[in-house]
Length: 191
Image 1 (cartoon, one colour):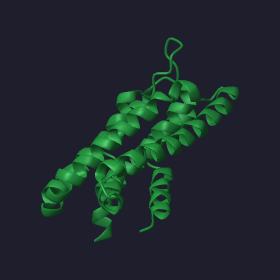
Image 2 (tube, rainbow, N blue to C red):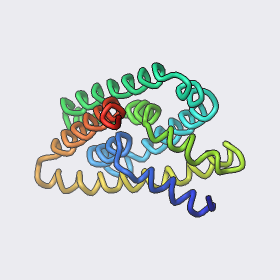
Image 3 (cartoon, rainbow, N blue to C red):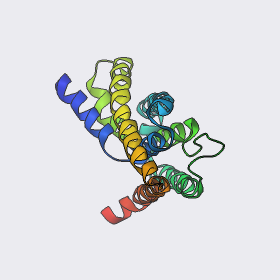
Image 4 (cartoon, helix red, strand yellow):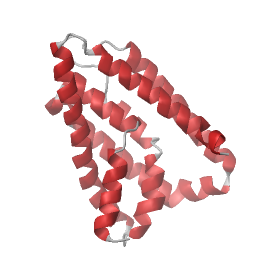
């Protein structure tokens, strides 16, 4: 796989809608672009940890044990359902400060995001070292995540003008539930 093709593939996967991107979108919508930028750090750090642990430890173990694989899928699905419930019920703004998407939400969601497996097993082995892959990955991750936050900020500005910012949060909650369900029942449907 060529270098340019590899990084275009990484960017393509990162741009694909998913649980983390949903939170980045909602974060941009509820906080605004500038205030949501710290979410980039949470996502990047979580992906670095996830990819490293998956590539070096969990990937080989989970591949050898279907029970561990299912346990991880169910735990991640339950976390997404929990987060969706919190997002659905959250007020768009509390005390003048957006409270819907916090650093820990983006960090934890990214840590359990199935995309980490794709990066650890599908892309990282094509770079000379894991450290080199992670360095390039963080740059691509921050660029694509900035796009999701920007899109959310634009949507949030438009929603605020219509006095209906809550629809962004509830739409995000529905997307998180859908991803959680796909994560848990996807392998069953594929069999």
